[in-house]
Length: 150
View 1 (cartoon, one colour):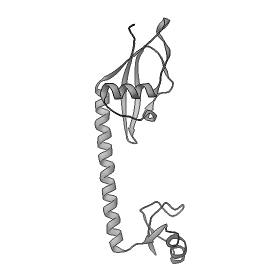
View 2 (cartoon, helix red, strand yellow):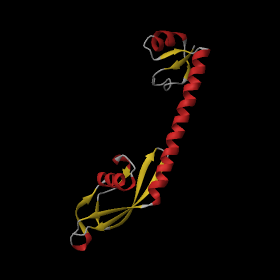
View 3 (tube, one colour):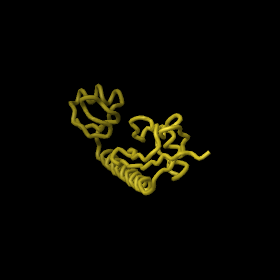
View 4 (cartoon, one colour):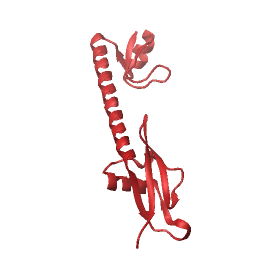
């Protein structure tokens, strides 16, 4: 029996996959619990159309992320911070501070979890951070921390 999975089923397949299962397992478990439906020609065509739309959506998201990465890499992010002796900051610059500055200076929105910051920035200077905009797209963001003028 061929079925189309409506949900992820361990050891059988993922949602949207076409699977061949035994008649009893398909009828008594998968169909009865709503995990799958019988693979008819009409449903197969609909599934192919849904998959094509999904792939097109993923492609658009990736292209948008690549365009955003190019915009972020084009300029350096300049941040001002209070500092004491030896160019040490009072406090630190965190991922949330960087997200706020990107939004303010570039007009771009990024998730703070996307900013790869090993540890908070505690000194003046230039830094290059990695920003994961999409599972396949990363951007290198140049950040310049300058002394705030009183």
